[in-house]
Image (cartoon, rainbow, N blue to C red; front, side, top):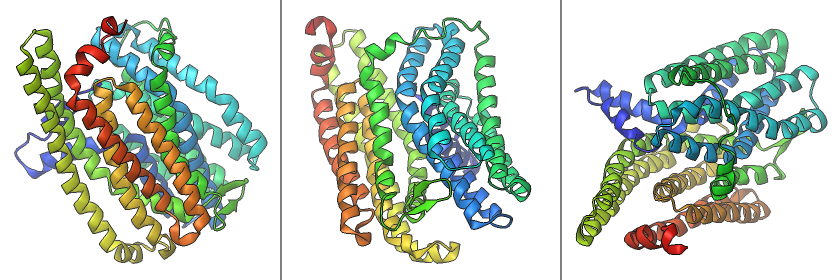
Length: 460
């Protein structure tokens, strides 16, 4: 699945500013995908819906989407991670005739595993009208399906198609939502939003089947990969849980709300963190365009030269080039994201006033910006480990992130309102420090790990 930056970089080769902006736009969508779609579409739906619905209806709609987004991501993580590895192996070994069956089998597995949890929640836990339960469940499964199909569509590298479909679905969902809300309330809002999700899900799925026109067979051929790559499954679970842990804990804050339907929520904290996450979108785009091109080129050279039986001196030289490329990408990220973060911190009061954001979110937003800064760097280092198949080390980082975010967020909750947000910030900073030391320790000893620790024949 690596090297997608090459295709994106070609999109920027128009000798004008629009070409560069287009490349960054595609990169941002590829890097943030359903997450960015949900935030923008949800924000647009809430803004337009405020003209036609009550505050209570908006709050119910908003929290249903947030719950579905959070728990579908967490519970889909293990399956998506393992299937991503399996799909990469299919493409590498040119056995793409199994792709349609893998997509269909993966969707079935995701839906079957999560159906008891989702249905049980909406039937026994959520206090909602029947129509809202049905549309809430539909929303959950559509989001779940998009998590998986996005992996397959990204492998096709047809980013112009991807962005068109996402924009089409986002626009349709945003406009349908308020129109239907006038007549049907929360059910109409959910149905309109689901229309946009359905367009994205089915269009992307159809594109995958059109690209791989093979018979659907051996749907669960990937299942043995769960035994072989159990650590990947845990990474998908732990990292996604860690990303949401502070939000879940803050839903228990004294300032939180018990919304209609029995959903605990702390809207001020959630909104502050979602706004903070938007500050890292440019850096995510820059990462896809830089690290996954310059780094990947050196990564390929390192291993291809080993296959050619080059001298040890050449292997060490290639290793240094690899480390240098990570340093350069990290420096570029630090400068770009650092500038954006500082600007967001300084201009936060002005922006809050201009857009009518509750000033109770200001402190949490600023801490969220700092936390998102470390969170993004942490994600990049975890990806670097995945390139070299250091799965146990990536699992250790995910475990540290989960433990620290749980512990520090709980401490900040007990300290009271002035400390809300410190837990997430401290967790990302500590985990980044741990991952930084671990990644560069592994890279300094890369030849040893290449020939000894990762060599099954030697370990055996």
